[in-house]
Length: 210
Image (cartoon, rainbow, N blue to C red; front, side, top):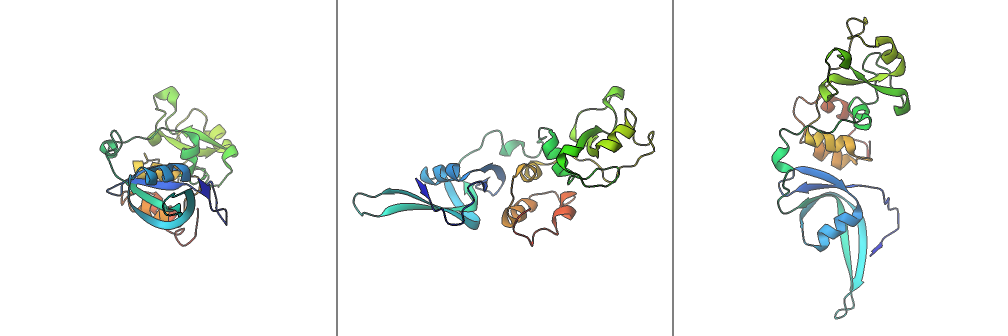
C-alpha cells in the first residue's frame, strides 16, 4: 500500500458513521482503506483526503487505487453503540472537559492554555458533589484556589455557563484532533438544538479547520 505524498497530512482523521449517518468514531487512513477493501463502505461524504495505491492486477496490469473521503458511512450493525446513543454518558477527562468549555475559565471568563487549567467541582466532592460532567467546569488555577472547597455562591463567584453532559455526537467532536469544516458541519447537524456548542461553533464553519 502506497499513499500519494503530495500535500497529504497523514494525521488527518476520517469520520466514520453508520449507514444511517450516525457518527461512530474517528479512524486513520489505514483503517479507512481496510473498510473499503472489505466492502464495508456504503457511501462517502465530505471532501477527498487521500489516494492510496494498492497492488497491480496481473490480468489487466492496472494498479488499484482507493480514494478516501473525510466522512465515510459503513454498513453492518454496530452493537452497543447506536443503541446507546440516546442515553450515552461519555467518559470524563480533562482534555475533553477543557474543549467542552473552549479552554475558558467558567468563573473569570479568561482563556488559558490547557496546562494552566483545572477541573473544578461546582459542588465540592467533600459536600456530596459528584465527579460528573454536570458538576464539573473548567477553571483557571487562580479561580480554583480562590473557590477552594466552597460552592460558587459561598465564594462570591458566579458561573458564566452551565455545565452539561455531551451527547455521543458532541463527544465525537470533542475528541477530534483536527476537525475539518465539513466534518464539523456534519457533526453539528447531530447536536441537540439546545446544545451550547451551537453558538460557539457557528462562526467557525467558514474556516477549513478548528
